[in-house]
Length: 235
Image 1: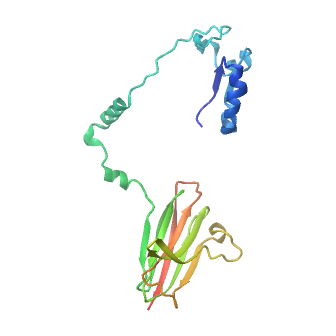
Image 2: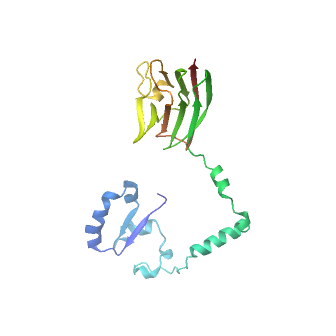
Image 3: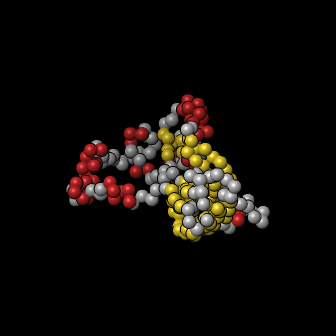
């Protein structure tokens, strides 16, 4: 809220006692504290914030006797504003392309890992506030175990995993879970890391995907970077 103050002059009693009372529950305390009804006692309200000489005469405050003249507020239509913006850039040829705009935006996406060979896959995840990132591991007949280890600023991070396969009515979930909690930790932030292991021995999950889902529910910055390590053991 960038508003400094609102002064309502010559407001009727019907507005103050009925209409404004209806609007009050939808206004924040900070917003309400900046609204002032100007009555007959100007020195206690208006004069504390505005010099009398700066008040326009048309608002009807005869005791003030303001001499301030009104000035026209410059404005222009949306097409004129766009034309002026393009001219300031140097013309139509200087406008950024659509691909440049897409490259400048970090969009959440999926990172896919193949589970057909034993390996340790490491990397970083850029997790935007209010967005979801997914690490996907493709499961094969020779995949034995998958383990994961995720570290970084985990405050406000929600984690979950599931083994799923495509079905007629959408995804078919074979197994799902959340953080493997140790030592009484109840969240990724208190645990200090996100770890887990999936044992595929005895399960017919070939062709399925293991999805490790991360959601950033809160962050002091717009984006936080987490480091991940996903280990694959295969025959």
